[in-house]
Length: 506
Image 1 (cartoon, helix red, strand yellow):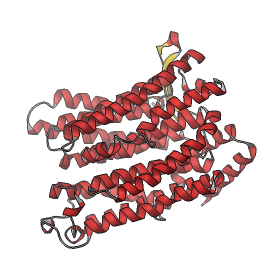
Image 2 (cartoon, rainbow, N blue to C red):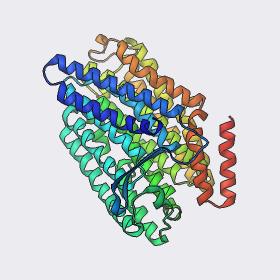
Image 3 (tube, rainbow, N blue to C red):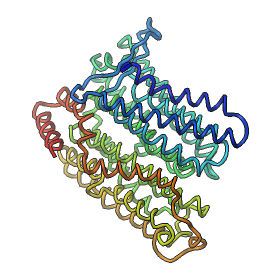
Image 4 (tube, rainbow, N blue to C red):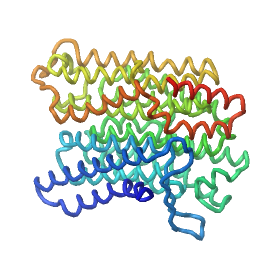
């Protein structure tokens, strides 16, 4: 059973999608049945993921819950899955956000509920497969599979510009992944296999490592996104319905950072050192550029979208500090950002759905009519700007601890995201929640029980990550420390280990 648990988690959503698609055809009653089936399936998967967490041994940095089956055996390709601490936390993030997005869709997705449920569950299976894949071709298949349901959710249930936003998202991501396919073929040709643990030990030449890492940077830099590969992001995030925005920003963008970590920092350490100054520079540019652009936006969702872009720049900086603190911080920031940004999109959507507008100028005084929303939004706003006691503070602190080993100026400029984030997020909060009543704001009703049920778990996890970060860092820190000891100089490795142990003790 332990070996089958990961497969059950991966494919149960797909089974639910197929059942909803084929057996819930018909009118409103069947549509409601499909929604309940989708929510029930995603909650069952969440329970199984918690069981996976409970059965995971954090002291073992290697793979657990492995499955290996013959696939294209003659070519050295197999169906190989398994999780280490890094994979596990992203599986937990996906399993946590999916039922919340499914529940949020009950209000924001008013047509074609069966299709929405099928798309959401298919996306969940693709994400689980991606995070657990231990064969590069299998990873590529699942990576591409995420495109279809994500593009459909934007294109079918999005805003007025949904067709253009969906097309942009698909073309950018699909175009970038072609570079990954080329790198995959080159690596298979050199090593005779696509098995990721084997490729980690393949010993590619320094020059080949550089070209391979460049290909992966182009592939994953689009999904992250890295500056200047971000053109698809504002339209996709702002036009997508709230559940899709939450999954896109909360999980799907993390697949780019996860890929850079797996196939950049960990697989090609020599090339990563060579590329680090350039990626650090791009990360800092993204942080500052996105913050300035966010402040100039007049649409609530676009402010949150650019905020997400800015924070992903911080994650890129953390990964390419190539220190244990920086990488730990980047992973922790991915988790925290996934929770907080999804919550912010849900909060913005709650107002936009009631007033049928996302324009900041049309809003004001919302806090008087929706005090519960105002309270929860304040928590998520503070978390987004890195207030101590929230998960974002821990992630940003660790990233800056890693950056200071590399360059004082990188740490200083990257730290600017806290200050600039406070400016545009508090400005958004003040303009929407306070001030004089605008238009029909006085007719607003506060959050429903269902909406509170979606936001409350996000609030609890945000505080949990800030107050007790060790419950998460202990899962992936052994993997990071092993990689740093393997790829770093002894002095750097020892320094990073001491810092990580000090954090765990706290």
